[in-house]
Amino acid sequence: MPDVTGPYAPGTPCWTDLMVPDQQAALDFYRDLFGWQGEVGAPETGGYAVCSLNGKPVAGIMSAMTPDGGPTPPPAWTTYLATADVDATEKKVVGAGGSVHMPGMDVLTLGRMSVVSDPTGAVVGLWQARDFPGAGVVNEPGAVIWNELGTSDADAASTFLSAALGIRAEPMEGADGYYALNVDGRAVGGMQGLDPLPTGTPSHWTTYFAVDDTDSTVDALIRAGGNVLKPPFDMMAGRMAVVQDPQGGTFAVINAAGPTSG
Image (cartoon, rainbow, N blue to C red; front, side, top):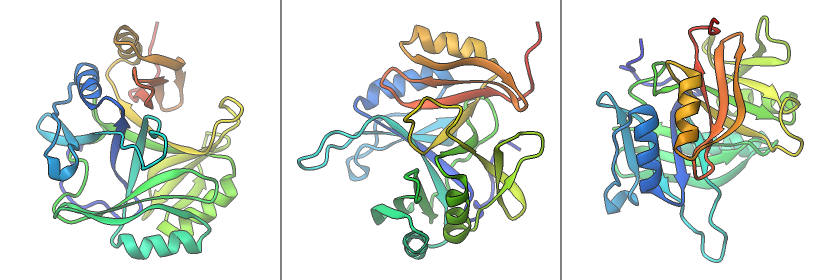
């Protein structure tokens, strides 16, 4: 079912958000591309916008904050993994060779968050839900359908995910070099090496959004000023493309119904 009615199991991707220089421009772009509704949030949340799809929370968009004396971070989508205890998970992250970039902090009464990275440098968020469990809709057009770790060292990443987050990486049948990330025996994401990507690509997480028609979505993205990194192509899970929004936020779109005909 696309609607999420219960809490996310620890280790499961539960939310995604985008940090960009121009928040309003991003809100307008994703409204037109995916049908999201969202507006700049209240000052006490730093203006954070919770976007909705059919009345349910689907993703967040926020303005990039410039650290004191530092450069503005590049536009990026961040995947958040559910945890029952952010602070305890941070200790496991460090113990497993990872790093903590943003220590645990409370977000009003919504939950507690942190940003960490694995030993290969892939950045991911942690979310300990209180009033806000995460995405209220997934696996339907305009919503997140998959989260994927691209890593420079699959063995190191696998060991880390198991030790820090209880996620098991197992080879995916029929997909050479691709791993399913499993929580409680259920695939919640994927992992692959960086070989298919341009030289120098760092380890990273990619958010996939479901669409009805990959080609028409990419056409609309181009008309709106976006950029195509990998044009639409057919693969075992459907027809997908890797793209950037006009500000440089990278994500994937996929029609998971299967390869298109004709």
